[in-house]
Length: 161
Image (tube, rainbow, N blue to C red):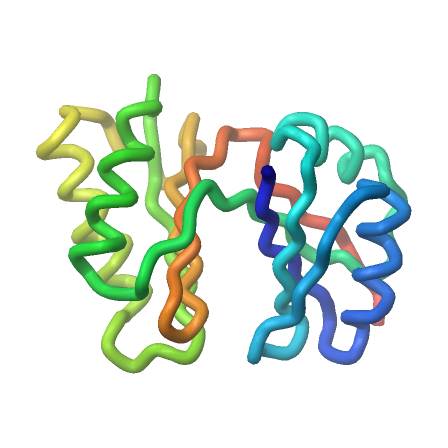
């Protein structure tokens, strides 16, 4: 099971659902409390889903971020998930966080503290401009999606409104 966080311009969520169904065929898409933010679940492996989306000519999908797991949006839960995923890093890394609907967690603080924790725990090198891996933390209210994303696994598309 692959979970993807997918963003779109506000009001284009319906178009994104259709595009995901065309590109991935078997996919279950759920809206979130935030406009333009959707979660898609597919039985395709991460590599297969991303390969199909890279080839797909989208009109509404802006960004696709694969997530490996969801945890409660609390420091200790996020830290534990990040440490589990960081074991798979072979090269340089960066931490990128996005916080929606949660006043206790701050993006910059998550990035700095989690990055320091990874360096201390695994003696890995940080590269903010061109990392081999990006540890992504997507906080959606009371839940946080965490993913280990290789250099070519985070997709961005140019969408015209």
